Amino acid sequence: MIVGIDYPKKKIAINNKKYFIPASNTKLFTSFFALKVLGNDYRFYSCYSIKNDKLYIKTLGNPLITQDNILEITNKINNEIKEIYLYYDYLKPTERPPGWCIDDIHEPYAPPVSEINYEMNRIEIKNKKMFPKNNFFDIKIYKGKTFINDNKIFLNRRNKNFSFSPNNPIEIFKNSLILILKEKGLLAKSVKFINKNFKIDCEYFAERSMSEILKIMNKESENSVAEALLLHAGMVSNHRGLKNSLLFLKKILKDEKIKNFVLYDGSGLSHYNLTTPNTITLLLEKLINNEIFKGSLPVGSIDGTLKNRLNPRIKAKTGTLNHVQNLSGYFDSNPFSIMLNGVTNQKYAKKFIDEYITYNF
Image (tube, rainbow, N blue to C red):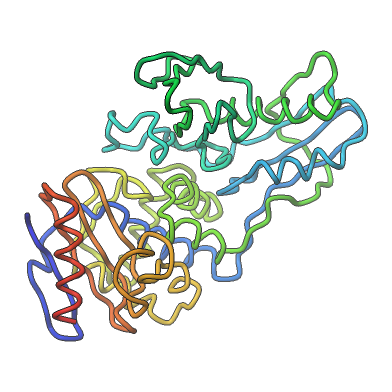
């Protein structure tokens, strides 16, 4: 196991300028980028309009749309819907950024990056019922191991709970919308989807503040929100797409005298990402007075991915991949970064980090 530690408060520097895979510590870079480009007071939203038998929706690169958001729209519809104008060409995503592991396909934490992030682009099955609502998938109960084949889910009869990420999130969103309209008796016999921009006065929906989005992303380490947030900040600054967003992020950090990092995504799922503990602490120093950012971090023994670890003096972002275990944030108001690569025992690695902080900080 290779250990990297940077804790300027006590001048602890162990391999602090050596490159490590950051895993979800990458979200610290995404947080900084979003706050720098969009600002603390930025609000995210999508918009809709209802005109006779037509429903118009613009996603506007929203980092998160939920089933409740869709129910709010359908509750305001009185006529059967025949056409749905769904315009979503904003983010220009790369479905699976470089360095994402092929073994992660269908895993609930690694959905493909999409123009629409609908319920984290994750489907939960409990007692054969799917959330969000959809009939795109057909559930088959059988004796063997649970697996997915096209639009069929073969579910073990003894364990009827399952979570996965579908390969086609936009189609799931469409299917869920149609099913909700159908259940409410608001769907015409045939309905047509049209992906076309339109100029109509719209009402906002799925509104969220920067604080809300950062908390969703950082406290529970939601990868789909991180990827959407990176692309949204790039889109707003006229740097559409993954490559352009990352190049602009690099420029912004270079202007802040922060270097020594290589990023291929916004969430940290990429095994190609590299940075140093020293770079992380410099980044955290830049954010030390931003209460919205600090409030988005998991708090030791209180919430998020640190709910069962450490104590409330720690506000920090975890970072876990195969053979990677990191923790970077603040001890009281002091930035620190502990990065472990080459991990063969995750339980031991977490214990090492927690005990190191307890006895040395």
